[in-house]
Image (tube, rainbow, N blue to C red):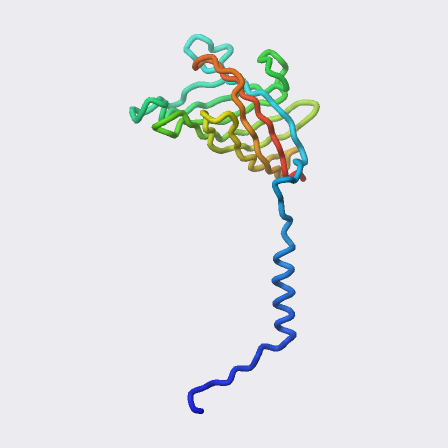
Length: 186
């Protein structure tokens, strides 16, 4: 029959090699399930004291850009901060770390912020940094931000920082609880 090509079946060794490779690729990655316990976990309290024009000695955050005229929810306003972090809710407790970075309000229809900051540890218990970023859906009781890496005791750490608002005193002071759960620790 003209026009028909006869194809040979692949060699059985080649098939076995391909199946073995696919099997190895499928099971060689470490899988993380939701029931995996964190390798490190701790709770810190983040104290944000906004500069109001008269509290220069105590302020830890300031507006870097004003809000736009696009809504009533501070849309476009950028805040830069260097906030103390403590092990308890007391602002006067000795800080175990500092949160340094920024957030901006990024929604026109409700209060919503986007954070990017580094927690800098310099205590007897921990040395190093953790880099955190993500959306802070302020209306939610808890919000999860991504832990994207770190240095020192937290070298290349990955995980989640769950934020909960504890105290709000107008625009002047906000206390946030941060429950940090690291799932990749080296």
